[in-house]
Amino acid sequence: MSINKQALIRYYALDKCFRNGARKFFKQDLLDACQEAIYNATGNREGIKERQLFNDIKFMQEEGPWDIHLLKLKEGKRTYYRYEDLNYSIQNTPLSEKEALLLKEALTTLTQFKGMPQLEWIDDILERLQSNYDLPANLKTVIDFESNPYLKGLEHISPLYHAIREEHPVEISYQGFTMDTPQESLFHPHYLKQYNNRWFVFGNIDHQPDFTNYALDRIHKITKSDSPYCVPCHDYHELFEDTIGVSIPRNSEPAKIVLFIQKTQWPYVKNKPLHGSQKVVQEDKEGVTISLELYLNFELEALLLSQSHSITVISPVSLKENIRLKIEKAMSNYSLSIM
Image 1 (cartoon, helix red, strand yellow):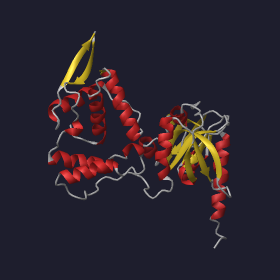
Image 2: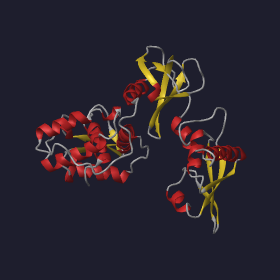
Image 3: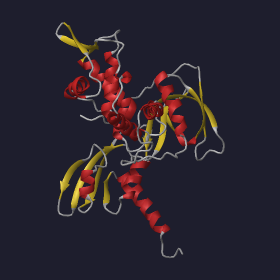
Image 4: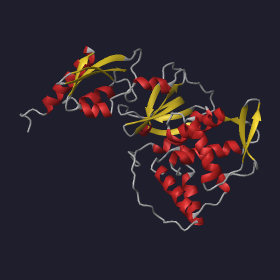
């Protein structure tokens, strides 16, 4: 088992549990701690399995660079885990140069996620690795994630993230594309989401019942407020399970959408579904009919328009009509009379 990105996150999470003498960490507690650490660092909510947990513990005890000494203590029929020496930590154990290089490679990969508040410690760790080991100063980049380090507004991720975690509202100065001047509001942030390389924060403007979202690249200033915090009324993760993008129409429900995919395009849509709700309704020699359950919004229309040469909307009628009007407008923009 190598020290890759997610493995490193899990090892540090387990290390924190094992040296906590004030609490008993049973199997499920360790699984929860690993999952929370992974979610905080990557946004991935998929839980790790019991087998993975015990493989991690075995690696930390026998195969990895640390050779940890772990107590397995019984309480009834359950077992909890703790270091023999609560002052021990894998963070204090010297690494070999090979292990330090692997660690630097994993951390260097994480540095591509610019602006992530959960990863603010990486630069410090990299500097310490470089000063303690004879490592290459610059590692060759061999993997690249889709991101835009020059995106305006990345500096707002950290204060908003901590405001959500610490549950305090903020004063926001915001200027949307249609606004002549910035507007000030007391905002209760609840959820951060990235879409199409842009970041958005969701929450409630003070005294308004419905949630709203702000694009981080349109925020001018954020100031911490001492006003009481309004907890979210929505499970945003669940809300966005039925959404492409970040727009959710008011007073609406997800709609059943039926699309026809031409035969030549179907392999791509099959291997990269438009959405998790995608189901095959019918298949013939011309192509495949699929259904989706989604909110009707701007981002969905943009996605369908981007593939309108090979995807046809069958229903609902309102969506079909919106796509038709936009295609007609696009065709008029490319009229032969325009030179």
